[in-house]
Amino acid sequence: MKKLLSALLFFLISFQSLALAEGVYTVIVKKQQEKQSSRWSLADWLVTKKRIALMDQWLALNSSTTWFEFIFDYAAGDIDDYQENSFERFGASLYIKFLGLEYSKNNFTTLDNKSEYKLNLILLGSSVQSTHIRGFYGKREDSTYSQELYGGSLTLYIASFLGTELNYTKLKKASSSNGLTSVEGERVEYGVFLELSFLRIYLNNFKEKNSFTGAGLSPRTDEGTIIGTKLFF
Image (cartoon, rainbow, N blue to C red; front, side, top):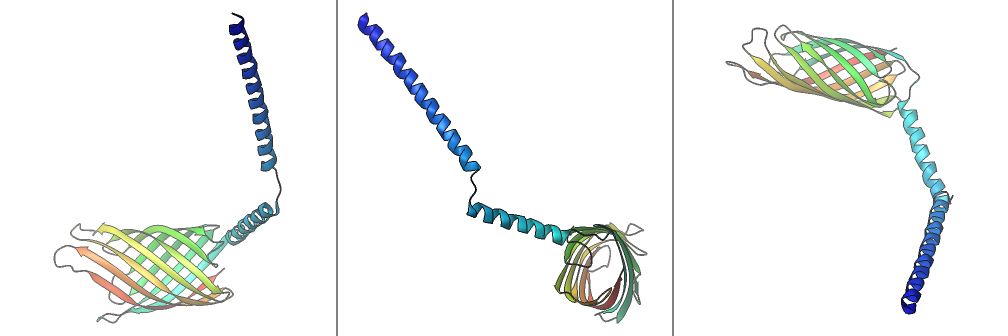
């Protein structure tokens, strides 16, 4: 009986000592973790400084004090096909911060005149007259079709007076006003520009592909060159 009580007492003392040691160990480890989390080091400071610098740079590139932008556009060009088809383009845009409304009209010598309405959103960049990426959604209309469209645009300034531009437009499938035919397509326009203050002169190439459904209609590809000017206010 005495041996059993002695063994039980020894077990209780050992368990208490182990629990106490475990508690002390836990306290020590927790304290070390707290010290490590609040420890200042040169490496951490350099990493934090670099991160803050990148954040400041991003904010500088994508923050603007300009609330309004007005843009007027005029361009002329030719379509490289057998019909010697030329056209003129008139356009105007109004931006309030990162949101813009745009209208343009294309007058052709042998094709239907086309009007476009777009809602633009600047996704990256401080303004239209800076390096930026924007998306857009809208509609294109002529005497036969009314097509929804969407796409994106990239403007990249190589220097303060020189840049390049790329626009991609997807034209959704739409039926004709009489319901007998339908059309869908896409358009790519790209080029370079020179800019002096509020004046931009640009030279673009374009290629537009359209697929038709209906009796006797075949796909059509229009491509050519545009020279134009934009005024920024």
